[in-house]
Structure formats: C-alpha cells, structure tokens
Amino acid sequence: MFKMVSSPHTHSGKLTARIMLWVMLAMMPAFFTQIYYFGFGVVLQSTLAIGTAIIAEFIAIKLRGKKPLNYLSDFSVSLTALILAMAIPPYAPYWVIIIGTLCAVLLGKQVYGGLGQNPFNPAMIGYVILLISFPLQMTTWMPPINLLQETPTFSDAFSLIFSGLTTDGFTLSQLTHNIDGITQATPLDSAKIFYKSHTQLNDFYELIKLPIFMGNGTDFAQGWWQVNVAFLVGGIFLILKRVIHWQIPVAMLVTFFCLATATAFTGFTHLSAISQLVSGAMMFGAFFIATDPVTASITPRGKIIFGALVGLFVYLIRYHGNFPDGVAFAILLSNICVPLIDHYTRPRVSGYPTKGKK
Image (cartoon, rainbow, N blue to C red; front, top):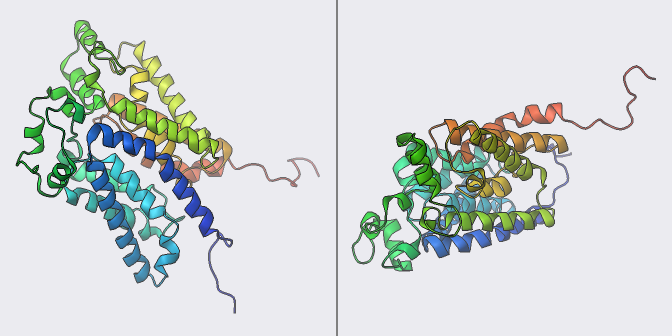
C-alpha cells in the first residue's frame, strides 16, 4: 500500500537546513551591529525567542502525530524566531517576545500545516500582533548606548528585560533621562512627529540639519543606518550565494526610492529617499523577510511584481499612514496577493502549440 502525501514528493531536509543556516549567517553582521549600538538586549531576546520557538514547534508537531526532530532539524523555526527578536526593541519585557514567538510559530506557521503551507510570513504575523497589542512596549527603543553616560552591562540588560530595572535600580527611562527626547524613538518616528507639528518651510530646514550620515546631528539616526547597511551587506552575500533572488529586493527598493523621490518634488515633506532606505526595517525587510520562498512569488516576473508591490505599500504607509515604518504590514498585504500574481505570471509551458496553430 502506498502512502498518500501532498507534494512536493522529493524532500531534501539538509538543503533546507543549509539555506536557513546561510540566512542566519548573513544576519550576523547586523546582529553584532545591533549589539554594538543598542546593547546586549538583542542577545537575550534572541535566546528567549529561539528557545520558545523550539518548544512551541515541538509540542505542536507532537500533537499532530509527527516526529518533531524531523521538522526541527531544518532550522526554519529558529530563523523565524531570530528575525522576530531582531525586529523588536532590545529591552522590551520578556513576555513580549514570548507572546510574539508563540503567535509566529502557532498562528503564523503550524495552524496552516507547517513549513511550506503558510501563506503569510510567520515572523511578521508575530510582529504585527505585538505592534497592535502592545504599542508602547514595541515603540520604546533605547538610544545608542554610546550616548549614555553609563553603558548598560549584560546584567543590566537581563534585569531590564525580566524586571524592568537595572542592577542599580534604574528604569529604562531613568537610564536615558539625560538624552534628548528625539533619540528615544527611531528616525522614522521622530520625522513623523516632526512633520505633524511643523508645516512651515523654515521648520523643514531645521530637520534637514539632522543628517542621516556622519556630521553634525548624527545622534538623530546613529545606529540605525549602520544596522541597515549591515543588512544590505548580508543581503548581497545571500544573492551571491544564490540563496535568494535579486528581483524582490531590487524591485522593492527601486519602487520605493522612485516614489519617495517623485513625492519630494510635490512639496510633501519627509526624510530624503536615501535616508528612508537606511531607516527602519527597509533593508531587513527587502533582503531577509520579503524574500521568504514560501510566502513570496515564485515566478520570475512575479518576483518583480511582488517586490514592487511591497515597495508601494511601504511608501503608502510611511507617507500617508499612521505607522512610521510599515514594512511588516506591507509584506503581509503583499503575501495576500501572491496566488494572484503567480497565476497571471506563469511561464508558458514548452511543447504546447501557440493559439491558432496546429
């Protein structure tokens, strides 16, 4: 008797595991850059996320009557957890990353049948649930640690995440009380607040004095553009290793850049297009999230359309929506369109006669 199973009928667990490990390796430059600028919180968040994800996936697969080790060995759940951990504030309370990881693994992946069956990116499902449910915790970013009078230690990071206090008894707000309020938020948050309260041209020039790159006023974006550049380096590495295809990130970034540049000529004030490309989760989303082979388009033309659609949604949310970044929402909205995109961009099958010919 033959066992009836769904496609694909030829599996290569080692190949999947190798791809996941390559992606995690490519994330390491950004991972260590985050540690350098924002402290050891990202290490603890990643450890919590990966541990929670493995336990949740083990239980879910066990309840489905499968062998957990066969599924855990592909490292896909570890990659999902690492992406989510690097997307949230490093000093968010421990229960934030635990809830987000459970939602990503159970609601974003296992409820659909596991790897290869989920229509939405699991990490972004977890992130969006956290952002909507706990906006305060998800938008409380610590300024770069080199701006603080006292650099938080690993013990301080542990205490902040699990008790909300440092080893000296200071809260996160007390630890950063000497820092200008503009550095408490991301550059995109600060720009959003600025443009809502300043509309005159002279005020616009005041913001331009805060450049994204080195020079006077680098505190405005310090740490953020460095992390984005690190993700860019990792993404190029993945393209060279042929782990991901170039169409999605290039289409996403080019579409957003063209729209942001065109908008600048209409008098709509915002950060420059270049500044936007190295702010928020732009490079992270372009190379490591939107390129998820399960939830992205699989046809050559479809990849370009999908990437362009993500770039369009990011532009609309950043310029006309209430959320300053919008990458997570843009990817999930584009995931909905993938079946339609793939349907209309299917390559012509060789061997069939053209219409009207025998």
